[in-house]
Length: 69
Image (cartoon, rainbow, N blue to C red):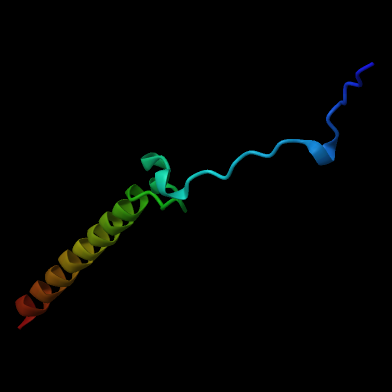
């Protein structure tokens, strides 16, 4: 009579550790995500547009001062 043993949790097989040197190249790109660049560009454009409109107002104000003299 032969006994067949069922594997228990203590006798389970374990996987061999993976080779850390031979990782997939795509995994090197992982890490924290970066913010999109388009909101920053839109903000810069808005600041530039505001500054240029203020500059035009300043120039017209200076012209009125010159005309008064």
